[in-house]
Amino acid sequence: MTASKDSKGGGPQDGPLKGLRVVDLTSVVFGPYATQIMADMGAEVIKVEPPEGDNTRWITQGPVPGMGGIYVNVNRGKRGIVLDLRAEQDRESLRALIATADVFIHSMRGSAIRKLGFDYEAVRAIRPDIVYTNCYGYSRRGPEGDKPAYDDTIQAECGIPHVQGLMNGEPGYVATIMADKVAGLHALYATMMALYHRERTGEGQEVEVTMFEAMTSFMLVEHANGAMFTPPTSPAHYHRAVEPNRRPYKTQDGYVAALVYNDKHWNAFVESVQPEWATDEFSTLEKRARQIGRVYGLLGETFLTRTTQEWLDTLRGLHIPCAPLRSTDELFDNAHLNAIGFFEEVETEQGPVRFPGVPTWFSATPGRVRGPAPTLGQDNEAVLAELAEEAPSVAPAIAVDSK
Image (cartoon, rainbow, N blue to C red; front, side, top):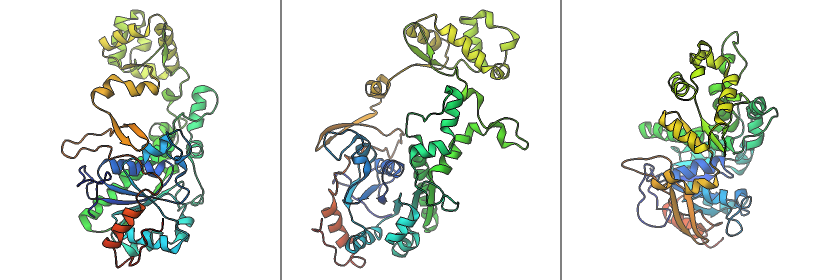
């Protein structure tokens, strides 16, 4: 793997991806989320933006224009350069960067990246063992291959609004950009698998990760249900998940989430709270699952009889999974997250930023937030000067003062 510099400009990186150099031509969230995790894990990620910058710079709030919250979060710890790939000089700079890289990842449509001259065959000609990851909306092998995609359209394609409608009576999106993030995780693991193959064999390869296929796989984990069989034994949805009564239970003073579900938890609840439910019709998980709407309805009526804290005390005493209903704002002052040091504060030119930290733990090579997100083009001079030294045969005359 190629030696890399710490994103803070210091000494060698730690983390399991130490020494990996990633050329990142992704934008919005799908690709940048994958490469953000690579950066957290020690890779040197060089984000290449067009002169106008990544759209996520502008779509959410931040302390200064061009540094919106989504952009700052999913591009943390990366180096950032601006290249206008319509200009031959900047295309030559990108070729020089590719010659030093382990991974090339992009989220342009296939026709666009090919027109610019950076499809897999062109990139492989520069760096034969490179891992080249395409982040697309739909697989190029199908009729929708060059179709643009966003989170909302992919949610619709893979059935999320449909199953939300089964639960709520009207189709709706889930209130998070799930397709972007799930596809980003697929892009991460697929790239890592290709790197593992290269580590064993020396062979690079092209990888394709698509939002539609990733989300279809994700949705059908449980919602395929009996539709997988021939002939089908049920519609393609998991009935418990779409049951309208599946929702946080209203209490006397708020809400509580609880899953009084398997036989152990059900019997403990019945014995402690509702002895009259100790009948044959509710005696097994299978019998309750067949009438899950009724079961949820009865539980809903019961939870109205006590306060949230009373229920939490009762359920925890019975070892039944439960939780209070929290807002996303409350996560920033969560006792558990604070106790484990989940949030990492990083000083930036715009002031301190409290980042959600690395959610995985390694005993020998821990990840961490490597630094702030780059301002637009902040590392052009440094990166291009390094390339003039590292890849002179590929780019003999890179102008470092052209930006």
